[in-house]
Image (cartoon, rainbow, N blue to C red; front, side, top):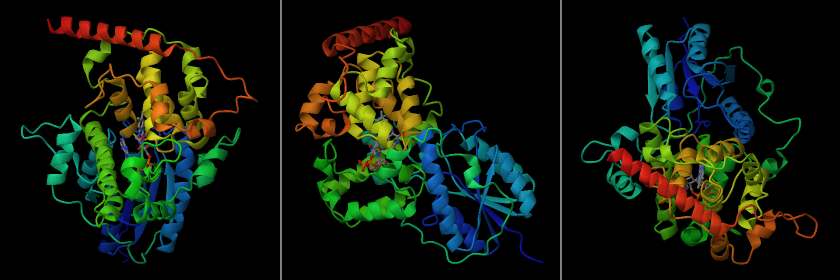
Amino acid sequence: MAAAPTIVWFRDDLRVADHPALSAAAERGAPVVALYVLDEGSPGVRPLGGAARWWLHGSLESLAADLDDLGVPLVLRRGAGADVVREVVDDAGADAVVWNRRYGAAREVDAGLKAGLADDGVDVRSFQASLLFEPWTIRTGQGTPYSVFTPFWRACREAPEPRHPLPVPGRLDGTRLDGDRLADWALLPTRPDWAGGLRETWTPGPAAARERLEEFAADAVQDYADGRDRMGDPVVSRLSPHLRFGELSPFEAWEAMRPKRSEGAARFRTELGWREFAWHVLYHFPDLATRNLRPEFDAFPWPRLHPTALEAWQRGRTGIPLVDAGMRELWRTGSMHNRVRMVTASFLVKHLLIDWRRGEQWFWDTLVDADEASNPFNWQWVAGSGADAAPYFRIFNPETQAAKFDADGAYRRRWLPDPDTDDSPEPIVDLAEGRREALAAYESVKVAAASARA
Ligand SMILES: Cc1cc2nc3c(=O)[nH]c(=O)nc-3n(C[C@H](O)[C@H](O)[C@H](O)COP(=O)(O)OP(=O)(O)OC[C@H]3O[C@@H](n4cnc5c(N)ncnc54)[C@H](O)[C@@H]3O)c2cc1C
C-alpha cells in the first residue's frame, strides 16, 4: 500500500529554500501535498490590501514553478484555513500536516487545528522559519516582554545565534489534487489596471529576492549606514516585500551578513531586529492595528476628521512637497522610502490630526510590503502611542527633513508633477499652526491621563 501523504501548508513562507516544514516533509519520505489557501474569513487573518494581492499573484506563480521543479504540484484552495486543511487531509488520505509557525492573531487558528487533527491521529508539526528569535524565548529578567528596542535587541544578540539556512530539498514525490486556478482568484487589478508602476518597480519571487540580496551584500551594504536615510538615491536593500511574503527568510538575510564586519552590515542586522521587535510586539498585543498600546491615547481628541484632508494626503495633494512626493511614490510603486514614511505618517497624525488608524489602513492597502506587524507597529511608533515610540511632541517638520535628506531636491523632483504643467495645490495646513494644534491636543491627553490616575 502506498504511504499516506504529508501536507505542507504554505502561508507567508512562499519559497522552497530554507523551508523547515518542506524539509521535514521531505525527510518523512512519503508523498507530498503542497497547499496554499486563500483565507479571507478566519479570525485573525487580515484581508490583504490591493498592492499585496498583486504581489501575492506573482509570488504564487514563482512558488508553483519552484515546486514543479521538485516534482510537486501546488494545490490552491479558497476558504477558512483550518476547514480547508481538514478537507485536504480527507481528500488526500494524509496522515501528517506540517507548517511554519505564524505569530499574529491567526496563531489561534493553528493551535485549534493542531489539537483537532492530533485528536484524529494526524501527526502535526510546526517549525520556526519567519523570525530569527521566537517571541516566547526573548523575555526580560522579570519574564515580561520587552517594550524598548535597545534592551530587546541586546537580549536577542545574547540568545543563541540564528541557525544557518536549510538547503532546497531534492526531488520529491508530489501528489496532485483538485484545486482552483490562480487566475480565478482575480488578485491582479483589471478595470482599471493600476499596477503598471508596480510591474516597472518590482519582480516578485525568490529568484529576484536572492539576486537583490546578493547584490546588496556584495557591495552596497558598506554604505548602508550613511546611505539609507538619503531620499534621492538611497542605499537600501529593498527586500521588505520579499521578506513579507517569505520568499526570502530572515535567516538567509542574516547569513549573507555573517562574514561582513562593516558598520553597514551591523546596521542592516539591527534593521532586521526592528522587524523582529515589531513581530514580538504583535505576538503580545494581537490587536496592534486597532488599539493604542498606550491607553492614554484612547482619550486623544481627533478633532478634524476632515474627509478632504484625508483624501488630499492619500492622493499627494497636501501642498507640502515632501509629503506629496512620498504619497505619489507610494501610489505609483507600492513602496516608499523609510524616512519619507515617517514624515508622511507624522504629517497625517500631527499636522492634520487624523487618527493613525486611517493612515495605517491606507498604507495597508497600497504597500507591497504591507505587513501585519511592521505597519501598525511603525504607525504607533510615529503617533507616539506605541512601543518605544517617538515622543508625541517630536513632530517631524517636512521642510527640515527635506533640507537635510533631500538637499538637492532629487527625490521631490522625481515624484512631484512638473510645476509648469500641473497645478500645484496650496498647502492645506500651515506647518507652524498645525504643530501648535497638535501639541495642544497632546496636552489634553496628558491632562486626561493625569486625572484618570488621580
Ligand atoms: C509608517 C510606517 C509604516 C511602515 N510599514 C511597513 C510595512 O508594512 N512593512 C514593512 O516591511 N516595513 C514597514 N515599515 C518599515 C520600513 O519603512 C520598511 O521596512 C523599509 O522602508 C523597507 O525598505 P528596505 O527593504 O529597503 O529596508 P532596509 O533599510 O534595507 O532594511 C532591511 C529590512 O529590515 C526591515 N526593517 C527596516 N526598517 C524597519 C522598521 N522600521 N520596522 C520593521 N522592519 C524594518 C525590513 O524587513 C527591511 O526589508 C514602515 C515604516 C513606517 C515609518
